[in-house]
Amino acid sequence: MTTDRALAGELGLVAEFAPAKVNLCLHVTGRREDGYHLLDSLVVFAGVGDRITLVPGKDLSLRLSGPESGALTAEPDNLVLRAARAMGVTGAEVRLWKALPIASGIGGGSAAAAATLRAIA
Image (cartoon, rainbow, N blue to C red; front, side):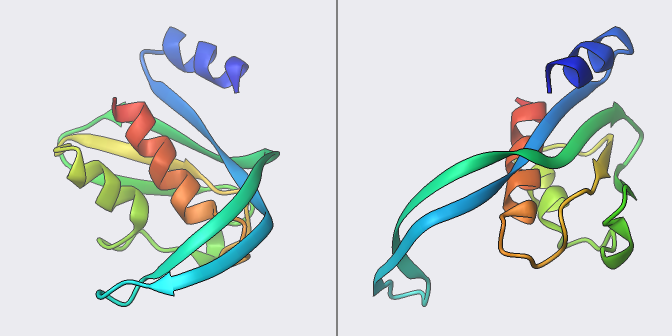
């Protein structure tokens, strides 16, 4: 969201929108040796989603808020924290404002992880 990004920039923070995705079609075309499926998919992104904000911090942590945050915990294997660690981040508070329902099939977790990667980059 442009407004969120501009406000975050004024405050010295980094913010990214994590849009929901809607699968228009999805075909399983096979299975890899590691057990994951091969997919062909056509998706569109919605105007609703979660929001990631990065705040400088001493350690890597995750702070949850928003109307759908109650069903989520800030455990170490959360996709947002995994994405931050994959980028070598050790000192930041990642704030996840959760608007998308958990396990609803609209890509909330992967969108938030991708938004985390964009924010770090």
